[in-house]
Every structure is written in structure tokens, then in C-alpha cells.
Amino acid sequence: MIYNILKLDLNNGEVISVVGGGGKTTTIFQLAKELKSLNKKVLITTTTAIYNPDEKEYDCFFLEDIKDFQPTDGTITIFGQKIVGEKLIGVSLEKLDEIIEKRVFDFILIEADGAKKKPIKAPETYEPVITKNTTKTIGVIGLDSLGRAINEENVHRPEIFTKITNTSLLDIIKADIIVKLVLHEEGLFKSSKGEKILLLNKANDHDLIKEGMKIRESLLNRGMKNVVISDIQRKMFY
Image (cartoon, rainbow, N blue to C red):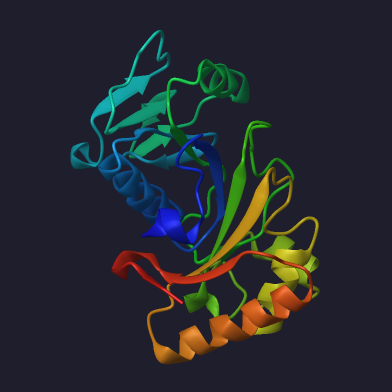
């Protein structure tokens, strides 16, 4: 279970901001389902934008204002500002903090930046948008980015990515480049709050699991405390 792997505080609840690429939305909704099964009151929202979720994914849905809503146990609530095309546009930090401080939800899961479905990204100057109330920041990187060229097809914001990792466009992404992205102050965990957890996702074959373990060892040796190798869709962790 993801909530066990992430060592969530099931008694006091958490505010979790998720950043990066490689499966943020899948991670958020899978975690929400697990918490719902534990009879928790879960809110999913975004401070940027997410794809409008399927009706099967939630119990309640609000736009603009959540007012004095009191969720019931074992439910998932979605909250956003408005819908534009296929996207649910996020709420302001001010509005989000008001909801958090009411403490009516046990867990609040926030997608705090975008990646345009790319496995790996670098943040723009205005990203990520993270509330001060965050207790855990989860950074997600798709291990399927390994072996790919640094370009628009594979990397969200490749020009910024190359500056952060001291690389050039069309260089091949290797383990050491991912390590640089994770550790750089303007990299994956830029502006993070609370405990930092790295999710090396899409570890769906032996070679990627092995590469993930190399990255984890390198990061642990450099002071990173929480690195999880995962295949969220198959609910596998290493």
C-alpha cells in the first residue's frame, strides 16, 4: 500500500503536495482510493491544473467554493476553480489554506505543478505552487526517462532542465543527471515544504529497477532520506 510506503500519519492526517512528472496524477488518485478504504475524508485539488477526473474517481465535486461542506468518512472530494476544456483549473493558495485550516478533511492531496504527461521535468520560475501547510512533498520522476534524449518530446521545460543539470539539449538522460535534478535547489524539490519523498516511478522492468536502485544509493549517500522505487500502476515497490 502506498500509504504504508510513504509512512503517512493516519491518526493526524497530512497535507501532501506532489510535484514532478512520471505519474503524479495516478499516484494521487491511487493514494486517495487507499485512504478512502481506511474510512478517511480525502480532498484532491490542484494549485495549477489537472485533467478533469472521471466520475468514478470521486464522491463529491466542487467548483469555485466549497463553502461549509462537511465530508463524510470514506469519501473522496474534488475541488477546483473551473473547468477549461479537459482541465480542472486549480485554486489559489489563499483559498486552499482556508480549507486546510478548517481541518474538515483528514488528507489533502495537491497536484502542485504540471508536466504535460512527460516523465521528467524542471520547474519554471513560478513553479511549483506549494502551500505553507504542506507536511510532505512528493517528487515524482519516471524512470522511463532514462536513455531518452533531452528534448521537448521527453522533458517538460528542457531548456531549464539543461541549466539545472549542466547538460545540453539532445544529451541522453542517465542516472547521474537525475541525481543532479533531485539535489539542485532549483530542481525537483524547489520550494518544497515538510518531509521530502522521492518516487522513482515506472520501474516496470528489471533494468529500470536496477537503475532506480543505483539512483537511490547515490541520493542516500548524499543525504536524501526517503527514496521509493515504484510502479504505481501495478502497485509494486522496491
